[in-house]
Length: 298
Image 1 (cartoon, rainbow, N blue to C red):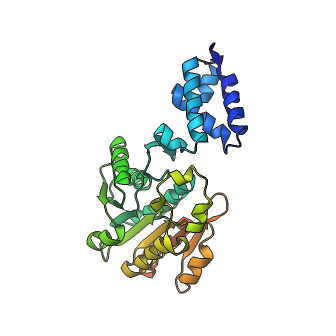
Image 2: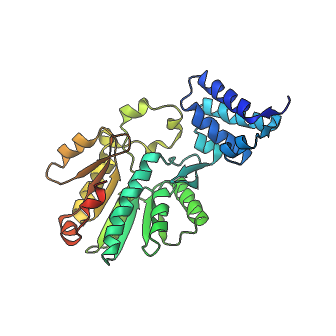
Image 3: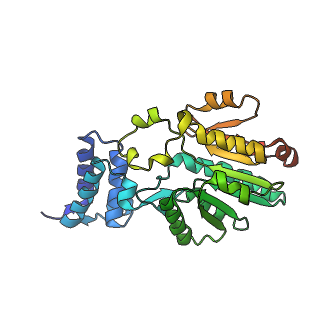
């Protein structure tokens, strides 16, 4: 097999995936090329890069593994979150773009509190790969962050990524947040809990793409029609009077409003216009910190 020009190979790979009705053939091909060739596709194209037969075979090996429902992030061993690379592997939930928006909202809230000269305690329920806490910890190096996860695989992934980005202000605990918070919570202080909890129902899980089902089910599915973890977080926020920033399912707003009809919950849409985020501010926090609600106005 002769060496082949990059544009010809790239187009051939897209056609190969498209002919098998594979979702996102362009994105998958792009990541496969850049991973194998260790450079940006646009740069390779500009320099008229020529692939060796071995490089072409390696790319096709990745594509075939994707066709067999293996998540691309697991194959590559990495995923990008807010333009930063994070290590990820089997047994750990793969970071998704919607969660980047949760980080932005949470950062705005923390910034409001921090700029008003307050001590702040930030916790994460369910670390996964650690992307939420690591991103926030880098933005606010003078604040200590604490995160929990029940999965040992998730803890190991977080610790690896924490070391890669040299984050010293994040404490990591292998255990259940709902048990550990009683020990580490700071009653009376300004506290915020951020979480991307499991929120998929069993019924919805059955309809998910097969490659998604290769991710850990316990990080995706929750009892009570996907609401159990979210409800527990809201109940704890009320009990301990902490700020809550939480990702939710796009179809869960009405059920949560009905469940907590006496609370002033705030819901925000993601970039696709779907209800995706829930926020709760204790009344005493709103009274003390002006401008908090305006952080969610964008």
